[in-house]
Image 1 (cartoon, helix red, strand yellow):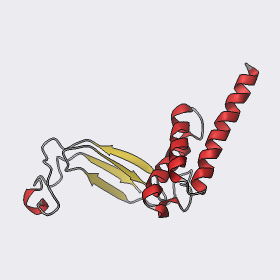
Image 2: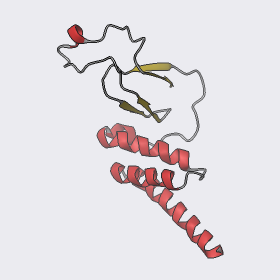
Image 3: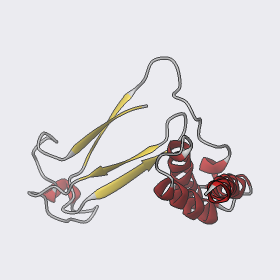
Image 4: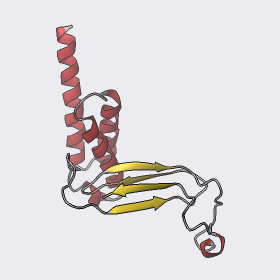
Length: 141
């Protein structure tokens, strides 16, 4: 049992370190996979939240490399925050990923009364509910 616990700690530490190294090496797909797996497997680990944040930043950086210039901060930024309200006027759910001084993800439910439309048809066909009944999320950035 003692050796098993020691081996588990070694695997846990190695997996986390490997994911962080992959992020720093700009191997964002590998970093995301490794750190998301770490966060799922070791929910009680003190580094699980940071692993989730880094996995989100890696997913964003895979599409936008500037998001991978540095690791997400482990703490919350000081000072005043700006509130950003995101609403979903689509008939399907949406997941929004964000990174910077604050990193996270939010999932918005589908808008039950909304219909799909093209960008060019938007002004004519967009829902006129003024955003009041749309699924919303409030982010403190």
